[in-house]
Image (cartoon, rainbow, N blue to C red; front, side, top):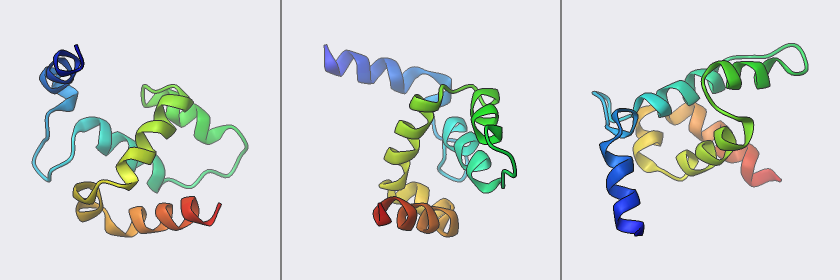
Length: 88
């Protein structure tokens, strides 16, 4: 059953890598993380506008932080986010 779920995920258009090695979902998450938010709740609104629930967003982001392929595509932002995560 788990193998079937993996195949289904791989066949979804957003799960397929694009040039540069990142999926559209990964690129959307990095776009949100590159932004600066001045007001409380602004980031949550941006997360929802990007098509995620906050929980799903942060779960996916956490997985991305450990993915060397993502780090190769965006080393500066990933290093900053890893340092923040590891400081807690």
